[in-house]
Every structure is written in structure tokens, then in C-alpha cells.
Image 1 (tube, helix red, strand yellow):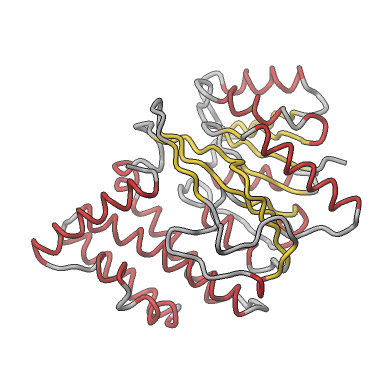
Image 2 (cartoon, rainbow, N blue to C red; image 1 turned 30 degrees about the vertical axis):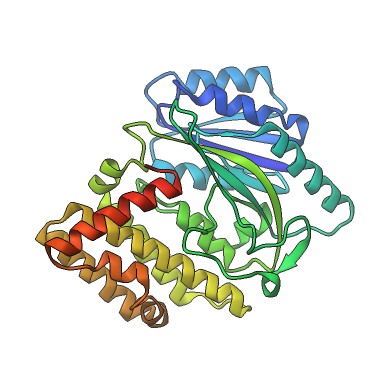
Length: 338
């Protein structure tokens, strides 16, 4: 039995995917590595096949026509056989020591027949070729190194969201949640987190920097200019998140509060991008998004209105936009993007 399935969605990743794969191979026979070649036209398929041939009991190369990040993840989830599942984008990598600790903890829980629904770990922003690193953690919110339920969880700050980089779901729970990500759409990571999270009852926080998140490439989806060009996809995912929140029936009030927190943060990010575009059309689109939130998730809308962040992204006039730009640049640097 494999303890952990690692999905590596790959599209034209030949320039950097080897580092990602090598970091995952540290898990040895305890892991299965699913490299999903999503219709690449470079050497991605060749590299995937080379690793699958060299490590036939660990690596599987899966080739498909291009379906986008969401489509690649759907395929990986469907093929996964490990007890737990982790997604690692092909330009990122895993910290070797943290991976070994995670696998040891999974093994301990499996042996004791006492398995949590989701593991949560820290992730680190690696800023290009510079030495700038920013660790994102959940200290003060989630007690580390113990099995918890939602009643044990504290209040998340705005900068503390559970992201794809920080969650390792039990594979059965992930599949049973029915998560199906939209194809040919960027920014589906939030749906990957939020849909299964509704069914999570037990959590375990491993306070270790497992995921190393590389940022700084000009063509990267998180690059601000790229995000502005793909704002329609950000809005699509944003609305799908709002719909998920509306249809969710969480058993715990703490879980419900977190789901609302997550939707609010994503909506604020979308609004900030509208502000950065700064056109009449983008202003109308931002108003339409908040109207959609009001219509479909009224309690999230009410809790958001009047908050510091909501006021910042809805500042009016030239002076308001100047204040927004200053705060926006500061927040990006604090979060590790600037």
C-alpha cells in the first residue's frame, strides 16, 4: 500500500520538472508519483517516461490531451491509489526532511488505525533566484502535532488560508467529496481545497515547511499581469466558490466560519485585481461580483461589508486609488509576492 500519492500536473514543464520529481522521490516506495502530462509540446512527455522507466514501482507517466490544470488534477485524483494525496505543481518542490516526517506520521496513524481526514503543513514562497523566502504557517490557529476536530481550531487571520500547497487530503475523502474541477481554467486550487473541506472532521497540523512554492517567473499564473489578463477565470472560480458555500451543509460552526472566511478572502483578491485594472468596465465587474456575493451568500457579504479590507478595495476617487495602491503593494510584499 502506498502511503501518499503525489500528483504533478505538467504542461511544457521540461525546464524545471526534474527538480520537482527528484524532491518527491525521497519518499521512496511509500509514495506513488503521478506525472500528468497535459498535452505538452516540449520534452515533458519524454522526461515523464524516463522517470517512469527508471522507477517503475514509484512513478507513473500519464499522457492526455490538454485539459488545463483542473483537467490534469481530475485525472490524477481518479488514478491515485495512495492513502493520502498531495498535489505539487511541476515548478515547485517538496522539502525532503518535511516529506519524511509527513510519511512517518501517516505510517504511525495507519498502524494505529487512527487516521485524520486532512494533514496541514506550512509552505514557503521562494522568490525566483533571490534569497527571499517567506514561510506561511498556521501557528496560533491550529495546535500542531495532535489530532484535532473543528472545535479545537482558532480564528484564521486574513493572510491565513488553507491552500492547495498546505493540504494533504485522505484520498478516499477527496474522491467521495465528488470534487470535479473545471477544465481549461486557472486558479482552480481554491475549489480543490474548499469542496472536500466541507466533509473534513479531523485535522492534523504538521508545523513543517513541506511545500516550496517558486514564484517570480514572468509566465506564471500567479504573476500579477498574468492574473489581470485571466481575470475572467478568477471570477469564474470565485463564483463557483460562492456557489459551493451556498450549497454546503457543514456539521461544525467553526468549519462554516472557515468556509465563509475563505470565500471572503478570494473575493477581496478578485476585487483588488479589478482595482489594479482601473477601468470603468472593471469597476462595474467588481460591483457585479459583490452583488453576486450578496445574492448567493448574504451572511458572508454582511460580514465582509465595513471590514478594513473591504473598505480598501472599494475606495473611490483618485486619492482612494492612491491609498489602495500603497496598501496593495505592501500586502503583496508581506505575503511574499512582491
